[in-house]
Length: 200
Image (tube, rainbow, N blue to C red; front, side, top):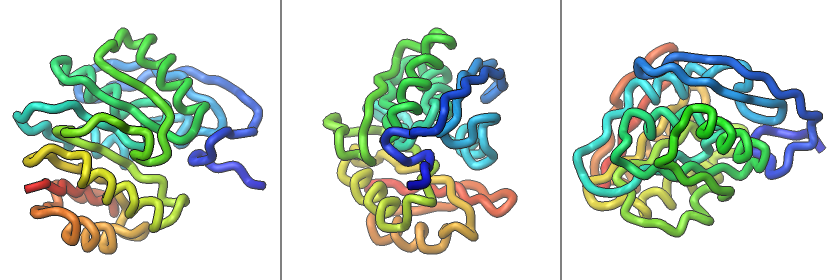
């Protein structure tokens, strides 16, 4: 059976590596490994989402769905120290790396745990939910993320999604318009779209 970064327990041999990057003007150290998404750099889509995201001035925690080794949730937690950030992934290796990385970067306003989509997320009333969805997991899985997010957001809260046009941006936009009261394209660059879907 082939192993993907959205597999629960990657069987590929561990080969950790460490590197640094600057995101939102802050320097971060990342430890990554085989069996996780974009192990050698913060991928363009995640970087665009990180740089574009704007937190609404409403009360509520933030959620990073499919957090991988942690870049999106970590940056949000660093630039919004007053917010509590939940970071979830189905990949147990990614979860362990995310825990290592928040320690390396002295980030404490986070909670990291395993969850298939939002299935194990008990908290509600999130002010923002962010995701760079696992395209290879299929449209059904990704649309389930969007449906679950709509239920977990506080009124006025937003789901932020980054997705490539060739990997389903038009169908994502249609699904978000079906689920949410307001959807806007915040940015588009190199074929990637940033959507903000607001619960109103």
